[in-house]
Amino acid sequence: MSILSTPTFGLTPSSEQVPLSTNYITNFNFLTQYLPDTYEKEFERYGNRTVSSFLRMVGAEMPSNSDMIKWAEQGRLHTKYTNCVATAAAAATQSVFTITTPSTGAGVIQAGNQIAIRLGQTVMIYDNATGLSNKGIVIVAPAGTNPTFTITVAYYEQGGQAFAASSTCSIWVYGSEFKKGTNGMTGSLEAEDTIFSNSPIIIKDKYAVNGSDMAQIGWVEVTTENGASGYLWYLKSEHETRLRFEDYLETAMVEAVPAGAASGVALQTTYTSAGNKGSEGVFYVVNDRGNVWGGGNPTTLSDWDTVISRLDKQGAIEENVLFVNRDFGFDIDDMLAAQNSYGAGGTSYGLFDNDKDMALNLGFTGFRRGYDFYKTDWKYLNDPTMRGSMPTGATASGNITGLLVPAGSTNVYDQVMGKNAKRPFLHVRYRASEAEDRKYKTWITGSAGGAQTSDLDAMEVNFLSERAVCTLGANNFVLFRYGA
Image (cartoon, rainbow, N blue to C red; front, side, top):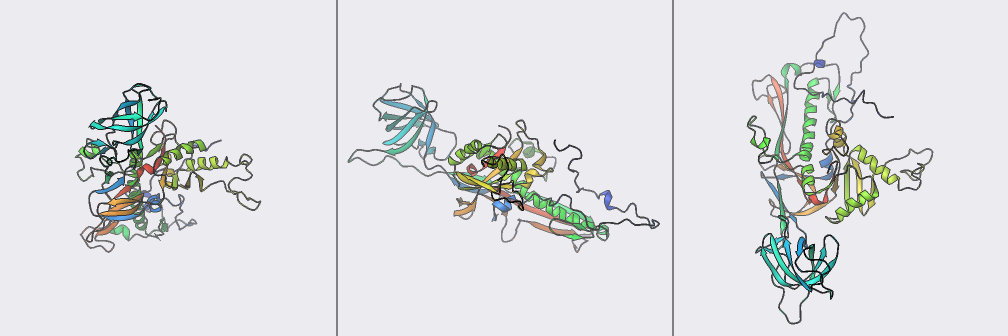
């Protein structure tokens, strides 16, 4: 059996740009002899409807003074070249290698347009296809110009080159060797950082109510998630606008994308007040320069071993938090339960000291396999008015099921402070100075509700924030989604 499609969950918004018809008195009659029993308090049938909390849990907020936020991230300590072609034949005692460098990447091209391999260094060389390998020493200095260079290597092995001519190989340095009484190393290497940047976006909202409606009493006591309550309907609408704006402060940081140079956003002139540059949200950054699991949900230990193997090749952060949708959470629970020898019978699933008076715990909060992984449900991915109702399956490439976020902080060079600073891997920068704080601005205009700024017979509550999210060390994040 399955859940029937009818009746379904409600998607009709309760927020409209016009007063709802249900707000007006339409059926009250003094001649009615009997009055119905009524529940004065509004029933909260959808529970807590807000979806924010993700960035509050994993990040921090700090001020910024500029239209652009820049930071530097460390490159690799060791350099490896993966597109190297041998010119000599198998069994040769030495060979010239043609090295084609990547177009981008820290530590690839050194000052003076040189690669990071020098005379006298010992190198490991292996065929990318077969794994056949040699060890050798660089006897002719790198020559050439970006992106193509050549080096000459003499092999240590008596049998000479293990792989055939024109084989595509990888080369990395593991040391050096010099004779007694010789000069020192020729040349030096300069540390290189990768520079990243992001731009804040301005987020706005507004709630308006006329003075007459502010004086209208209702018989339903309305409430909101932040505890506000009263018999005045406009109180509910104002508070819901505020809650909705606070959700947008988070979801905009998660979903934002930069506007392409020739995109419709960058070139549009229809609405001149619309922003035209965008920003780099968490999903965009991780999908662009992080790690992506494209098969939906990893459901077996071998799947997780693949994820862990990738983390080994990145920052190897010890503790990580998994923010997942409901299906992903169940898949993890089922995978961990299957490791218990009694899992099939259900006798010790979750709580391993169950007794007849104890509720059976069928869920897990985390596990350790190489690293510590802590699991938590992400309401944003479950909410049917947001990502919760997007299609799933191999053809549904847009559906994101979870995000792995490294715990802790990292050292970066802060351009504003002019020094190294510890920052959470994920944090929000908002515009602020001594004269203006745009973290969360709200102000009232009009002539009602205590405002006396204009002759408008209404109260207008305005909301504004200017912010961007900084995803540091995106190579340590993993995005779980459907689609290659």
